[in-house]
Image (cartoon, rainbow over all chains, first blue to last red; front, side, top):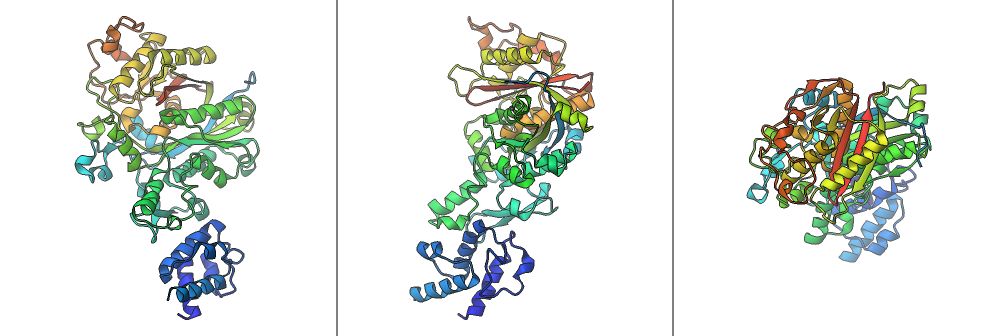
Length: 87
Length: 450
């Protein structure tokens, strides 16, 4: 799966989170920070992670979630890493 | 301790009421002797597994709300709600169950009516005291089902299971919405919760600890809550919806489990007066106690008599109208009527039972019924006790016991105290009564500002 394809999928998830300002979802890149750039409430991060697992059909380890950064890149890396581990 | 001369005014009110578009519609329907009780499709869907199917319920659509169901959890788990009328910000909706949203909407109405500005609302002297009877049962049931029965991870229920189900969730959500800096708490006393929160709020102002408080009780629509009472065999059945709640009637056979929200804005009297506020009423006194007989459920004649002594001694006012708890249960109504008559006598006042019109709103009952008392003071009309067609012409079994010390006439002798239809009369003072499981009793006396 291409990294841009994953980013597009994450944006689709973010569109379902009503506490995120939807106007900020234009131009999301790997360097976009969920909390600093999108003002995502920290309590919503686990909801985004759970929806990410469902959308990309992966199951993250709890340790990986605990150590997850707040940038889009961090989630993309974790999806790829987890998929590789599952193969 | 109370500060002599310090009084508490009611300056705003709002809420969620079954079948009603808002407070004016609620008032109009009540004084037109209408019932707000309907057949409930959600209960009917369970066929013979549920005894009662009537309720004063409120749908999401009726409140201008829409549930967004989580794509992760099964069984329609409401991830959040959309306010189709844009009254509550999405960030506040994310932490709210349906009852919390009703509490926030009622708060907005009450503050608007009170005329408080943002400086007054966000003051250290402004508090929030709101409670509910049940837990966040709708949220909890589905979250637990996904974890225990379906074997899903905890995170699939999302990160808002706690804030949307905790005991004082309504107070917390309202406080986060209005950003007050004073107290934020909830009082829980079962079916006396609504009045208990208003009573506690009254004391906080009366004792000089706060100047303004948003207070009340809420019970969000929940079949999960309904089935608990249905299983106890205490809900009304066998009547048409509008005839199901029949306090004091000889054929009553249980209460109608209902839902709603009642929120009021209280303010220290002189502050309200100084800013030219419309003073809806003045709270004379609040008094509460416990039966002390160790019985969780059965009402206590002695406990209610002590309640009356407390409220009359401290308020010094005999009411023109007694707004009773009047649930429509066989035991509750007879004890209550006889304790009122024992204290106030056989004439000179009237008894109204709003549950006859909208059922028993549990944790919201006391606050919504307090609002009905305010409406009676405003309209100068007594609300009815619908369906009180015939009172028992025979003595109650407990009246025949050797140790009975109360009135010795059957309930039928007090027929004239209980109007079947609304009527006009001069009303200066209303006493509101509510009781709850555990033997808790609450009374508040509220008067016109004249």
